[in-house]
Length: 327
Ligand code: DGY
Image (cartoon, rainbow, N blue to C red; front, side, top):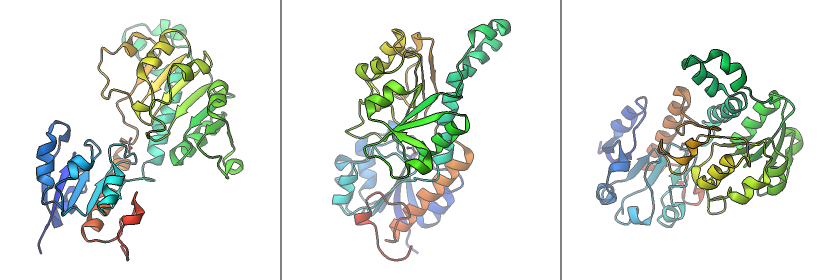
């Protein structure tokens, strides 16, 4: 049987690489960030499929010489690196991996809330530096119980974070473009953006990166928050003006920030943010558990193989060009 030609951009999970190899000849770029765009473009010239982990920009410029391409599959839920319209114009379905990473990402997000509130990381640093007893004063935190969490972007992950917050005795507010019709069931309350900022003790950002959300948090937004507020970003770094966040922390406009995503990413260790003492940053590990990354990889490979066979992708972002028929 003739094998499909596929470009793989990013490290493929070991559990699924065999499934791709069974039916595909692979041009494998496991560190695609360091590969020049014209090299990728050349590799895509004969390719029927592109499998990406999200480290490359997929746009008109990359796709201009890829006449045979019939599917792009990415193992992430976010796809701000992909120009979906450019794919739709070419009739190429694009698959991402929603759903399977909800609980893991919610765990990490709520983990940041908890670590920030209770200064867990600072406590550990005091222990390892021999300052155990100073730790009892220096790692004083704040209660979650009775506090208000404001979630900006209450989708699947936001709902899973809300459940964790409610279990900890917090009240949950949210801001979305539209008021949800299941507020009562979820026990959450809508607030206009500026009201959510001023009422919340913990502001949690989970909105996808788009033209609308880019730079959504700047000096003005941080000034609206309580001086005691904790700011958590587990969505995308570009939603926040990083220097405005730095100024807010430095000038005591907010109390603390815990970030899983940054701009730039990776954030250099000499970045001004680290001059402030009230910051915790993890290296974009929201979905990084063994189980979840395996599920994402399986779903992404399902989408890739389906598209190569011109069968419907299970989770297709541009449904209008998804293949029809039974998967
Ligand atoms: C996602 O799936 O979007 C995660 O943030 C990894 O990029």
